[in-house]
Amino acid sequence: MVIVLAILAGDLFAQKAAHGIGLRLGEPMGLTYKLYLENNKALEFGFGTAASSWSSAYYKNSFKHYSRYDGNRYLSHDVQSTIYLQGRYLIHYDIPIEGMIGDLDWYWGLGAVLKSARVRYNYQENIAPFRSFTDTRTDIDFGPEGIVGMEYAFDEIPLTIFGEVSVLFELLDRPAALRAFAAAGVRYNF
Image (cartoon, rainbow, N blue to C red; front, side, top):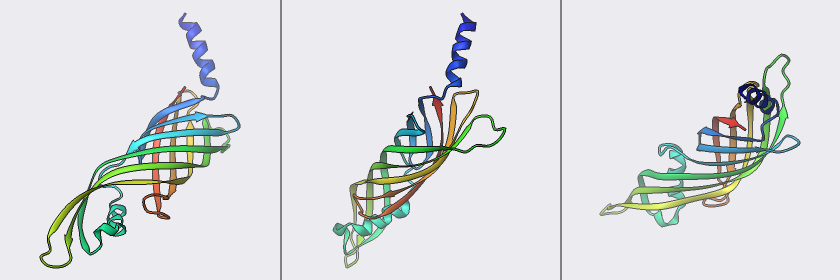
């Protein structure tokens, strides 16, 4: 029985995996699921978050963008929660390296990002009596994303490691704003 299972497992790993699920570290950080399609195509879905200290300049600039804060001076902000949803269509290209064990690919693609963050702003009036205020907003960003990255699939274990960069072109909340993201991660293939 053990010998039959070992032979079947070897046959499964000899074929390219159809699915990968794993962890992504960077912005956003979270879970990633990848469905490998025919002809070197793939669909990827992500669910994640970001550390509250990341994107500090973005949220400070967002304060200046909101008309409700006109005539007030930014003091600070605190990001209370952030949720990212990603959907992507990717095209993979093999990088042939003689003698390399495993598969190294580079890929590019297009997708969409939806991000929601609760941000608490602390601000002050610019005129006397200079009262201070606190206001909590839900910052919702949405837009298309362009991605480029590399991934390495190990030959003898069902793992893939990857690294990538992407650019989000916001349609909501700050139209035409560009945001860059970077991440690395690992997926279990099955």
